[in-house]
Image (cartoon, rainbow, N blue to C red; front, side, top):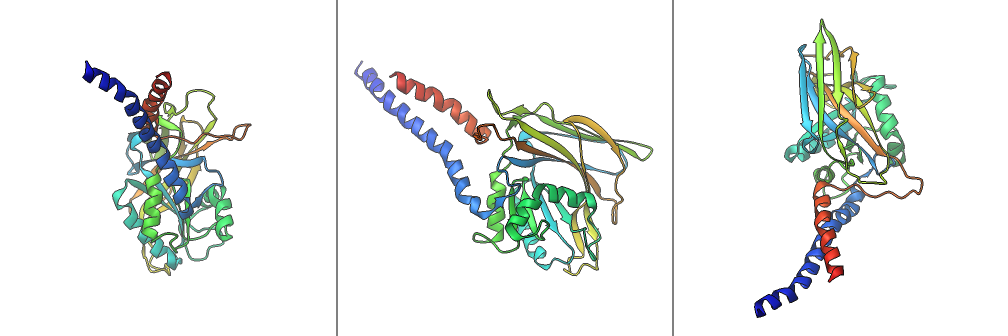
Length: 318
């Protein structure tokens, strides 16, 4: 009986301690993120926006389908570069080292407008970059299109080749560790191509993703993109000396709807037979009338909240 009384006396302090620990766990990621934001700049002048997806089809003339659960999606790295950009070699080399411990999809935009050397870009690739990242890039370095610039998950922009922290590798590693912050909890994304007599029809579906919000939710806008990326292209006349340029973006096409299809021509690869199609999905939380927005939460944080709230209620009742 005395043991039971002791347990009852300890129950309330233990619940209080556990609630405090869970609260600290919830606040720690937010504090760490706020502290690290000096390493990068906001890529779209809107913190509640980004990019996810990365489902990839290898275009070899045959039908192909890929599907992936939302929680297993790779990280997205978009980089603005040029074949004459010498300091791009250092930044891209650092990124190659940083991604070794991550599942990533890399897409490199090559300068095209007013360009006399680089042969790889196109109007559509420039238009996507400027429309999404041009304003933030200009605010940071005075140019809408500045090589080198990398954007991770459509949200965190790194300009130039001078590290903000200890090194470029550590800067990129920290940014990659943040992950995708879209307000989804799960679901499946599908991406496919059907080829008939050299005519390619691409289909995509992500309309079953679960929105991570219960009620009084903000509006989350999504826009899908079809990206044609060549794995490797050789260009020995590039003055930065790389010769072989990886993950070269040739065309980008904005898509309509979350479950639809499009018939379009596939760009011809610069060399070889290594063209791929990549599905990207841009997301944005539209500002509420009050201007107040709750931060997106990950699955771990959400589960912690499910535990912490009943504990707090039990403490109040005691």
